[in-house]
Structures are given as structure tokens and as C-alpha cells.
Length: 130
Image (cartoon, rainbow, N blue to C red):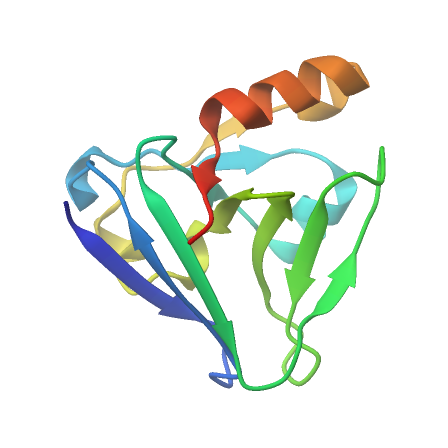
């Protein structure tokens, strides 16, 4: 299973993302909410993969919308690394070293989903945390 590496700009937050997808097959999802748009975020996840997050300093955790998911932001350089909910998460694809090899991001609108629909989508699509 390929393992992708990534980090925030200053290297305080880092990750390893294992997925069955080769870089040329990955299509990031660009959330169109105002928070993700302002961060330029697009996400990748694989429910059969694994996500390992590490940090030298704890990330800033920000909740918005339904206030269920934690957006992990570097307190030093301000980069949004990932979003997590309990034991699953999605990676900001722009933080991965392999990003240039991915397909163009596809715009998605999770804000149009109700709270239970969002939770079901996360549980079906996000990556288990190591």
C-alpha cells in the first residue's frame, strides 16, 4: 500500500497517509464552504487506508459548521493539515508531497448535507487514524 508523506509549511505538524490509490488516480475533494475555501483546502481519504498524525507542538483545533469535526491547523505557520472526527480523518491534499501528481480537485458541497448525513459520509469515506 503506497504511503504518502506531508506536513505543514514549517514542519511542526506532519503526517503519513497510507492508501490503495496511486498518485495519478487520486482526485481530491475541494469543499466549497467558506472555511475550506479560504484555506485552499482539498481533501483525500481512504476508508481502507491509515492516517498517522504527528506534531512537535499541538495543533490548533478549530470547529466550525456543525462543530463535530476538528480542523487541525499549525499554530506556527497557519497551515490546515487535516480534519478529524473521533478515530477517522481526511488529509488536506495540498500538504502531501505527492500533490502535484494528483488529478484536479473535484468541488463538493458538504454544507448542503444535514448533520447525520455528514456523519454517515465521514464514516463511509474517511481514513482510520493510527
